[in-house]
Image (tube, rainbow, N blue to C red; front, top):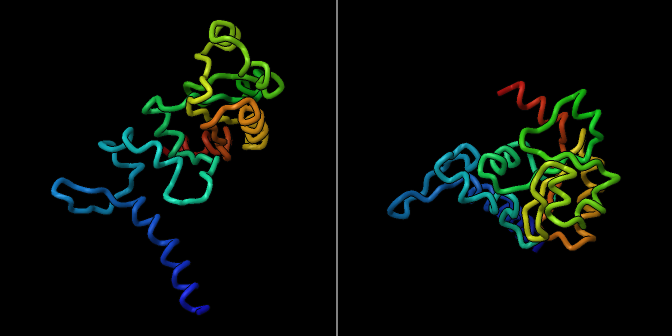
Length: 172
């Protein structure tokens, strides 16, 4: 019995990776390729990138590749919770809105016009896909918890933060 359970667990770990890396071609044929690098299907599968293939609760963490794809498809509101001086000194992810961590709770309760006026971006709706980021992923996790407590449903944390973003951008 123990061996069969171990075999099932190995199989369960392989199937999502196979599904993740396969693309169905016309006529039902399957081609193994990277979903992230497949520009034809990029915007169609952004939900799969975040939700995966598990029956477990979806992960709230987003990788660099996932964030790049979400930004290119305009499928997420990216909120950087660092202080303004940090963005000036280190830089920011293009398209992100700066809402310092101490202001996240109040900011997400403003009306759309006030939010836009104060933060220079579109106010996310409670059903919008929101990705929080900071320098290394700690403060953004706190912001995610705050947003969740306010009823936001589709919230994610860019775990690597600005440090991971700038490292990956230098490599590209």
